[in-house]
Amino acid sequence: MDLIFGIILPVFGTLALGYGAARFGLFDEAANRGLSVFVFNFALPLMLFRAIAQTELPASLPWGYLLSYFIGAFGVFGLAMLGGRVLFGRRLDEQGVLGLGAGFSNTGMLGIPLVVTAYGSSAALPLFVLIACHSLIMLPPTTALIETAQGGKQSPGKLLLGLVRSIATTPVIWGLTAGLAFALLGAVIPGPLDAVVKSMGAAAAPCALFALGASLTRYRLAGRLREPMLMVVLKTIVHPLLVWLLASQVFDLPPLWATVAVTLAALPTGVTPYLFAQRYGVSLETSASAVFLSTVVSIVTLSALLFLLRG
Image (tube, rainbow, N blue to C red; front, side):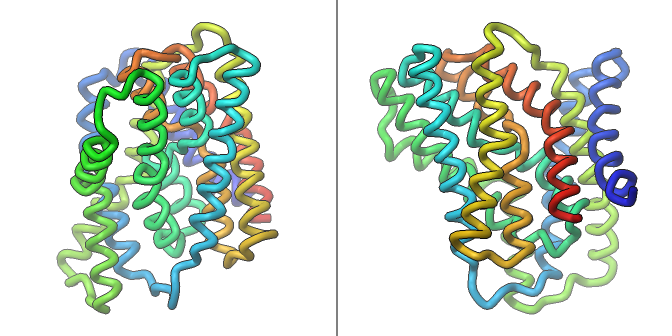
């Protein structure tokens, strides 16, 4: 019961409240845009800064953590591409979008508040490691694949430079980096500043979840649902299963790191695959359906996973 009322209900209840408010016109697009800016430019960076700054860093980074997560991510990426080609006759660029939809987690709007709520501030360090690497590892090969399939509109070097610049200017990354610097130096956040950071950071989780719920009203189930269903199964079931096998049977990760890796792998599809579909003009309906459907399905799958991991 503590799991239900302490984690599941607050997380998914807030998400549902945001969806209902936007669906019935009580929270419009402009309001959601403002809330999202507050969350990602201020509240989340400050929350993560404080958590990392107060974390005791491990003697060495568990490299098996990254290998477990990203081998699993690219594993489902490849399975989605194979399914797209064999089952649905998709072109290579379309397969790339399907693969990204199966392997790219919603780490920002859902992953951060869920993991921090479920496992506490001690989970901030593994969160930092994955968030810092997530886009940098997943997006360049996807971009290269789609660009090659569509005739190579931009050079790989230019694409990678743009991606690095985008990540380096992201407020969440700045917050994480500043927190890491404090932790490495053994610095203490001054009392008055810590009070401000703590109060701002406390708003991050509920506001992020509310904004995510409101943003789901932009997406609709459309087109053939077999393709998004394949992506949903790979993302919410196969990806975490692969990561669990690797983390527990191959790399023998510390329990907290393994738990965070599996939880992040079980997250629904992030909005980035949909943005790729928009940018390249392929599989738009499938991507939109996958974002919506995987988020709805994850209410059940993530709840079940939390019962197992915290049982």
